[in-house]
Image 1 (cartoon, rainbow, N blue to C red):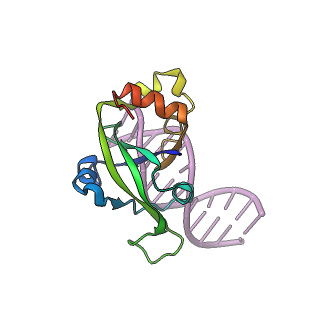
Image 2 (tube, rainbow, N blue to C red):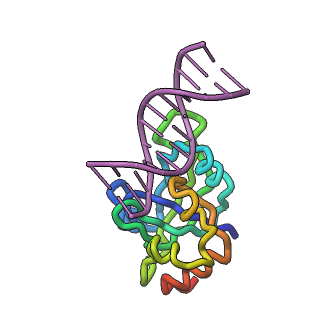
Length: 139
DNA sequence: GCCAACGTTGGC
DNA sequence: GCCAACGTTGGC
C-alpha cells in the first residue's frame, strides 16, 4: 500500500466538502501538473492519503482513501489530464500543522517541505506513521 | 500584499 | 533545443 498527500485550498475544496460526499467520494479533478498527475496514475484502490489545507490553514486535517484509479478528468476535454476518486476516512483528532512538520527533523525530507507547490505528493511509510501519531490518529 | 519557487509558453 | 518572459502557487 502506498501513501499520498492531497493538497487543497480550503476555500476551493475543503475537508468538510470532502466529508459531505461520504462514501461516494469525489474525483480529485483540476490537476494540471504532470508530476501530480503521474502520482495519481500510480495510485491503487485502497491507498491512503493525507488531506492538507494550504493557504490560511496550512495543516493536515484528515485521512482519505483512493476509491477509483486514474480516469479522465471530467472537467476538461484535454486527454492529458486524469484524476482519481477519493473519499474521506476520518479527521485527525489533532491536525498536524506545517510548522509541526518543519520543526521535526524526521520529516525534513518530506515533499511538503521541499516542494511546497506540488499538489499531489508521495508520502513515505515512515512519514505516514509518524504524522498519524502526531495527529492522534490510529490507522 | 509581497515575493520566491516553479512550471509553462513561445520566439528564435 | 534553449532560454526569457510570464503566470500561478503558497508561505510568510
